[in-house]
Length: 214
Image (cartoon, rainbow, N blue to C red):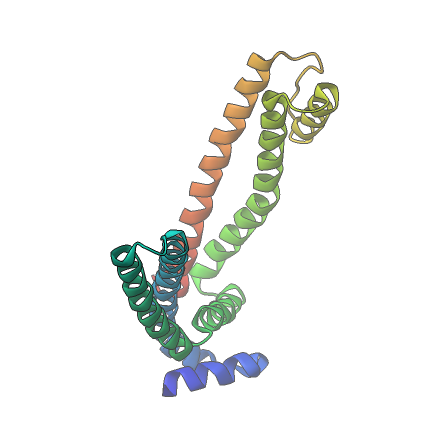
């Protein structure tokens, strides 16, 4: 709790965060952020189970006593578990945001110093910025291709949108392109998007390693 209180103070007065204290608390903040992630996933899963149990209970007929009893028991159990998870989330607090804040502060310190990690962090930042621009553009072009292949609505307008979005990426597709060509381009775009997502994940992992002293 002491560490969490210090982290909250840092977030409120971010311009005066002592960097030596950031180094001290980064790993603790990381553990809390991971704990938040696990709890949040559990919350999502249990919420889904609750909805399912409610649907089953609503669907049970008035004469289906056994089924009603089972679903009521499930609903009660899930409600108890969900309450526990929500209490745990409240205890963890804004762990993810606080961890992100500490990482940003440490990155700023390293990139402004003579530490060799700073140069690599700058390069990672540049690559992530490029991905943030290129990946949505490729996803948009792929989606436009899938719209063409779906065959709904005005095909000419759909193809024109696809040609425009692909052209913005420096690629060329004929306005008279057949479905086979559109499908091939859409598949290539999809594969490239997947590669870029993997690269982005790798860069984020490496950035975190560097900031944690790796």
